[in-house]
Structure formats: structure tokens, C-alpha cells
Amino acid sequence: MAQRRGGACTWKRHICEQLRLRDRLQRHAFDEIVQRYNRLLEKSDLRAVLSERYQADKYEVARGHEAAATDAGRGDGLALQQEMADMRIRHQEELTELHKKRGELAQTVIELNNLIQQKDKEIQSNEAKLQEYQRQTADLEGDCRELNNCLQDLERANQTLKDEYDALQITFSALEEKLRKTTEDNQELVSRWMAEKAQEANRLNAENEKDSRRRQAKLQKDLADAAKEPLPVDPDDNIEVLAEDCGKGGGETARERALGRTASHLCSSKKIPPSQPPPGGLLDSISNIFGRRGANSFGTSPENCQTPSGACVEVRVPSTALHVFEAHDGEVNAVRFSPGSRLLATGGMDRRVKLWEVVSGRCEPKGALTGSNAGITSIEFDSAGSYLLAASNDFASRIWTLEDYRLRHTLTGHSGKVLSARFLLDNARIVSGSYDRTLKLWDLRSKVCMKTVFTGSSCNDIVCTEQCVMSGHFDKKVRFWDIRAESNVRELELLGRVTSLDLNHDRTQLLACSRDDLLKIVDLRTNAVRQTLGAQGFKCGADWTRVTFSPDGNFVAGGSADGALYIWNVLTGEVDRTLDRNHNSAINAVSWSPSGTYVSSVEKGSKAILWSDM
Image (cartoon, rainbow, N blue to C red; front, top):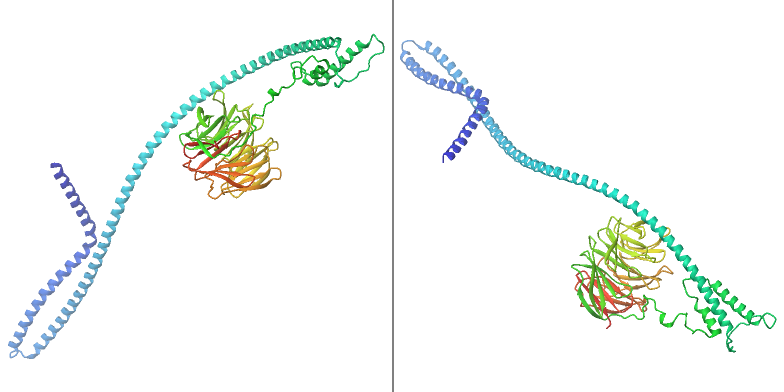
């Protein structure tokens, strides 16, 4: 309570001081007016007193005149009346002048009061502005304190980072020195290894030479033994008759010399390596002559004849979803079958490449490839099915070995998302296309970027032939590049952003999908659009929607934004069938197995589906 009373006295005292200050400031301006006004009042009071006195004197004079009218006469009365009239006129003039001054002073007081009110308003406005400025000053001081605190925190963080940088620099120097020593040791080991390999090669060459001489001697001996044996000659055998030497005793020797010359001539003309058996043709002809060996002794047996691993016997157009499974934790962007069609690889936004084994119409999980720092955008197997190449959103491409699932190479150098990466036909080089509008050619032997080509637009997909790279771009163009010359050979402009490219089995036709919801087949021999595929309801769902040829090139499969899978017949240009009611979101990618048996599709959700006609 005491504090409250003390606070009340304080603000009252403050108000009194402010009022006194205002009185002192404002009284000085009106002191002269007040003094004049007081003098005027005094004069007015004096005039009133004099007026009363003059009235009384007037009455007394009037009575005196009346009394003295009889005594003094009228002469003095006229003089007095004249004097009184003059005095009255003067008084009247003075009173008029006083009234005039009083009106002027009243007007001055009114004007000064108005001026005082205006000044009061200005003072109030200035006080409000002063309070606003004080509030802004307080806010700015608070901001300044916060900025100072932030600056101190940043200085501390900067010092910490500088210390860490110095430590990392020291570590880097140590590692660089270690790398230099390791490189020197490696070069020494390589030199020693090459010397050992050279010695081993010399030893192997010597052994091969010995083995070759031994085989040649054995062959000569077998031929000599066979020539000594009497054999019946079949008239149907096609045997060249050799000229014999004259004389009876020289017939057998001439026969041996002829056979030896024939065999040695054939061996020398074929240039048989010493590590390989003689060709079947030579030994078969010798067997036909001498009847010592069977027809297929060293020739190629029918059991050893194999069909190429990537050949497609029969393409099955899918009609049934054999297996629907959860492939990734999130969106699935890429899918690809291995060359042998036994493995299925999928890549998603969970930064993993998952491998699935296709067994009896089902996809069984086999393993996962890790190491990417962002979502996977494309997947590619090498032609032997030993390596897997994946592009990702962390500006890099990576290669794993499928035997041990180990990450072998990480190719960095792009400044944007890598949207597609492909093996060239030699499997020793890689081409990658990025959102940074460049293509890069990588050498896997040296693990370096050999060439960088600026394309002018973001690259969404790539396909390769032996010496040509075809790239699809955001600016609606398909560009053809000569790897040897680093030049853009030609361009083909479509009606929408290009999302996918694919080649048929003999690499003579190019399939391009674009955001105008059309698929175009380009004949690479004539560089012209051969066919345009579309369908009612088909809609390209993203800039990275992938479509594919069937292994025989007679069908095309593509996924729509509504989750339906469309199959086109290339020969007729019509939709062969539409498979829906299985995907719940837009289909991102489709892959057809090289065996032609299965088709796999993945979606923006987390599901993948294995299709076939079984």
C-alpha cells in the first residue's frame, strides 16, 4: 500500500510540475496583454467614477443655476453650460476610444486563444510522434541485441568450422601423403607384377612351343603309321590322286611324302594355335581317308550348339497380374529385367535398388544395393548381367557387382540430378544425362569423365548404339550425337517434352514417349517418324515416364497416369489390350523381359506388378 501511495504521489507531483512548466511557458506570452487589460479596466473604473461625479456635479450645477438664476443672471450660466458640454464631448470621445480598444483587445485575446489551442494540438501530435519514435527505438534496440547475439553465434560457429577445416586440411595432407606413398608402392607392385607376368608368359610360350612340337611329332608319327597300313579304298571317297615317283620301290615313300605334304600344308595354312586341338575339318578328312576316327571326334557336336542368351523365342502379350507386391518405401521410379530374365531390379525414392528373383510367376526378394544418397531415377544392366548401373538425384551414377552386391564405382561430376545413365555396347564406357543440360562420357577403366557435351536442355533419357547416343530433352527434342566427334548430328522435334527413349532388338527403330500423350516410332535408317501411337485415356504421368519395346519389336508397353497399362501392336498401330484395376496411382516405368515372358510395371505409390499371359 505504501508503494502504491508513493506511486500516486509521484504521478501527481509530475502533473503539477508539468502544469507549472506550461504556466511559465505560456504566461510570458500574455503578460503584456494582461497588464494592458488591467490598465484598461482601471481606466474604465476611473471613468465610471468620474462620470458619476460629473453627473452629481451636473445636478448640483443645475440646481445652483436654478437657484442663482434669479440672483446672478443668465450670463454666467451660459458659460458654465458651454464648459459642461465640452467636458461631456471629451468624456464621450474618451469612452468611445476605450470601447474601441476594448474590442481590439478582445479580438486579440480570441486570436491568441486559438493560437494556444493550435499549439496544444501540435504539442499533443509531437508527443504522440515522440512516443512512437521511442517505441520504434526500443524495437530497434531489441533487434540490434538479437542481431548481435546472432552475430556472436555465427562468429563462434565460424570459428568452429575454421578449426574443423584446419583439422580436415591437416588430415587431408596426411591422407594425400599416404596416397602418394600408396601410389608409389602400387606402381612398384604393378611393375613387379608385370615383370612376373612377362616371365610367366615367356614360360607359357616356351611350354606351348614344346607342346606344339610334341603334337606335331605325334601327328607325323600317326600319319606315318597310318600310311604303312594297307587300307581298302572306297570308290566313293573323294581322294586326290598324287603323282608318284617312278620305280617300284619308291611307291610307298612317295605316298607318305604326299600325305605329309598335304597335312603340313593344311596345318600351316590354318595356323593352328598350340593350345587348341586341330580343326575338325582336317582331322575329319584324314579320318575319311584312313578310317581311324569318328566323324565328330574334334568337330563341334550338336549338343554344344547354344542359342544366344538374349534371343527371344516367343513374346507373350500380358493379360494377367501374376504378382502384386510392395517394392519400396515410397515412390518407385525405375524397373529393369536382367539379360537372362531371371532377375528384376527396381529403384525408388528410398535410395535403394532392390533385386527380385522371378520364380514361377512370383518375385522373391534377393537383395538390395545401397550407397545412393538420393532417389534412384534409372536402372541398367550390362550385356553380361554382371553389373548394374543406377542414376540418382544426388548428381551421381553408381555401379554395383551383382555377384557380391558391392558398390564398385561412383561417378560424380554433374551439377544437377542425373536422370538417365546407360552402358555403351563395349560395357567399358558409360553415358549419363542430367538436369544440368549436359551429357558425360565415362571410362570405367580409368574411372574418369572422358567428354562433356552441353546439350542446351535437361536430358530425361538416353539410348545408345555403337557410335551414336540418342537423348530426349525437356525442350521437346530428340538429339543424335556422334561419340567420336562430340557433335550433334541431327535433331528431331516432337510436340511435347520427351520422357522416354527405347530401341528395338536390331537397333533400327527408336521409340519416343512425350508429354503430348503420344508415342512415336522413328526409323533410324530414314530418320523419319514411321508411326504414331496413342489411345483414348492414355496420359503420360511425369517427365520421367518410361515405355518399352517388346523383345521382338512387335509390341510397345506403356503406363498411364490413371494406373492403366497399355499394350500397342506395332504392326497394326492399334491398342492390343488395356490392363487396369491393379495400380492405384500413375505408372512411372515399364520393362519387358528379354525372354518375352513377363512385363513389369512400377507406380508412384510403392507397388510393382509382374504381368504375363499365364
